[in-house]
Length: 430
Image (cartoon, rainbow, N blue to C red; front, side, top):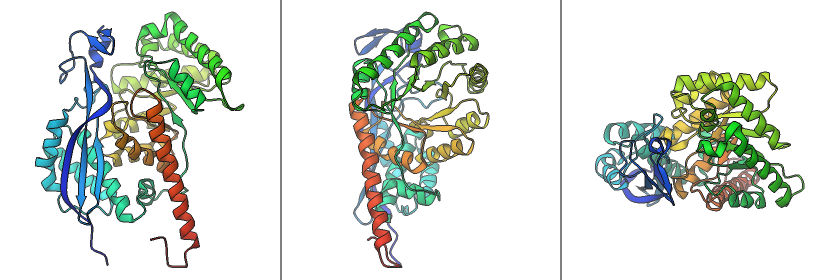
């Protein structure tokens, strides 16, 4: 029996995220945009200015066989609001990981990801302030380590095996986000035949317009642009708009008038299926569940096919479970950094499947290439309804990172499966 592979050293390096940490409360209160910055008074604790560079911490687990497993701590763009953990500071978090957490992790057997992740999360809760950010990065490194110990280095295969998920690894649809560049980035998405677009970053009532007129105009433009630029005759992407609660805000929270606008957008989308993320904000988790369920019922009664996605207030595995069991939405965004250790993300995705709700594997523009690659493996292992192209707001970079990681993993796994079938009985790939 081979000797167990364990952690012998823990290193942590401060880094940056791919976008910014933004004080959402200050922005909603009327902070003035000034180029790439915002001018105004800070509201959310933890911020010194309204927009601050996002940060990250790379966690490096040195294993007893010399391999170094890596994961990145990260947090979402709008940290500190809606029940989310306050924004963290990379230098402090790196210091806490090396000084306070590392002694607990030394000697941990990394052969079984799930067991190691649960144990590490418990230790993190006792020793680290930014618990979810830390657990997010450490658990990524543990999954990387488990894939190394298994010998195949395919993190998605570790997930399939440990959660006993049937079926092969398979591609899932990727959805893109445009950021503020809502026109040029849509052109890029169409030229690259992205299956779900454009996200849109509809984060002010001005972008919605009176009775949804501005947003309706934008959807008409997207549809026309698809017809003009598409390179495949049968290309008919789903239109997915994240409206940050602004549709509801534009009509003083009325669910009936919100539904009116969504139906106008549906008509404007023509042959393209329409998904609306966070159409309104009810101010708390329980109120949000009730409000979205009511809106969804109104749309169904009217014969609308618009799909509703829960985002804000669906932060933890418990939150996601409540949205799912109450059948309040069609899909739920599982925002990976908000759930801390990635074993919670896997459980939340499977919970959505169990309750007949589509899991959207999200995340944030503020995370890193490393975290995006790792969570891509969750998407293809658990067969999510759709998966975010991340990080960043430039589209090209995030789409490249996620699509290429997905294709690499599928090709490697296919090759290893073929070797297994060709190997003599009792033998497998080495």
